[in-house]
Image 1 (cartoon, rainbow, N blue to C red):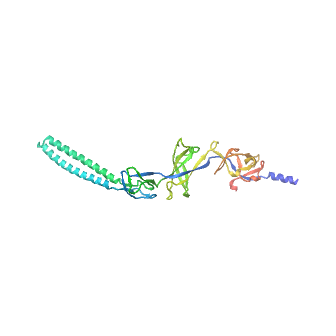
Image 2 (cartoon, rainbow, N blue to C red; image 1 turned 60 degrees about the horizontal axis):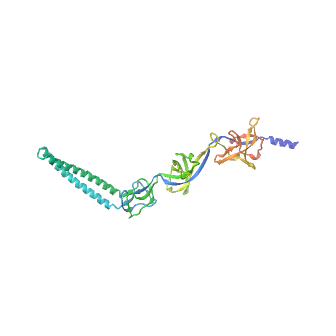
Image 3 (cartoon, rainbow, N blue to C red; image 1 turned 135 degrees about the horizontal axis):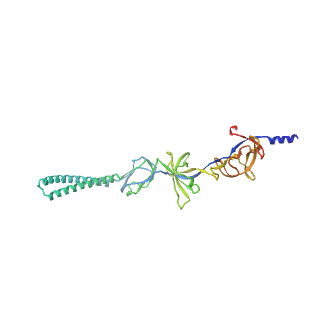
Length: 351
């Protein structure tokens, strides 16, 4: 008699339990892909004229400010041409002065009927020709000055020398690259993503980057370009501009780009998610204990539900089958539960 009474008291004991009410949410997933840093602005610098490289004023890896000298050609021939142009201009100006004086004199004589029309027109033509020769000579001086200036190669912006493509005393032609020059103020990262997530990658989206050479720093970046891809590859190039930089970060460094993605389930408005602690296992697979309302106020009855689970994310397991929105799942004390047991719900504040 006493034994039966004790068992009945135990079964009727109401156990307090912690719980989670199932609701719909957007599961936050991340996908990581390898990437390589590159300069946001990169150029191969060359001379606009040809000649012998007299001086190469930089070395590989040098940081160069805008306007600083990078290389210089032997300017001797260009200086000679410039001096010749100056001399030609001076001669043209002398001829202009002579022609002008002659024209003014003939013009006065012609006005007083002391010179013929033929003499007047001839003097005027010579004056106009001399004026044109001076204009041409000035243009030649300007061109020669430019050619002389082009024998120096200067940095177009602040940057770093990422490649040396020529040597001192080497002949070079106009347009042939001498150095590779990369900006230091703007670094980008190039990566590629597969076709199954490219639709979730948007221009302007924020990502996180970690470089192998600087593992202690996480860089924030913003997607600036999303390529439509090519028929020859199933990966889609993506360009990310770093929102911050470091003195230890250089073009060509490898790293990992972490993309935050929203994974929406088949349920309208989001996925059903359950805390990992709520899931139990037996020989038949995964299950949870749920609290179902009883006829007594604030008292619930324990039920058992089989589950089909999806991916495990930072928010919990995605529920594919077995639970619905609004179900109350017991999250702790599973070893004391069984189907039909009476329980009452505790809030997190009661922990």
